Image (cartoon, rainbow, N blue to C red):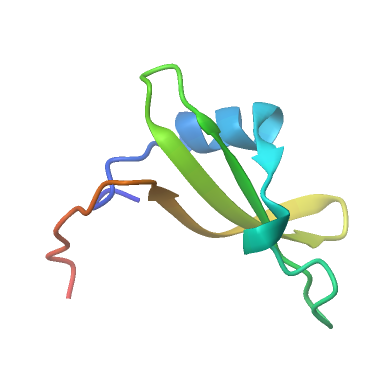
Length: 75
């Protein structure tokens, strides 16, 4: 998340207020369906957060800022 300049707060915002992009989701994938939630953060970032439900919680698989390529030096 740090390489993509996305905070946990922004991820929470999109999970709470974003819309499901069914073209980028895999709701029928078994055993783990995945949903791509998209929306704009308060800072104006257009974000996609891919999540998988696990019981009563959501597991964040990945998060990206749409239209922006950030360099990553983690490896």
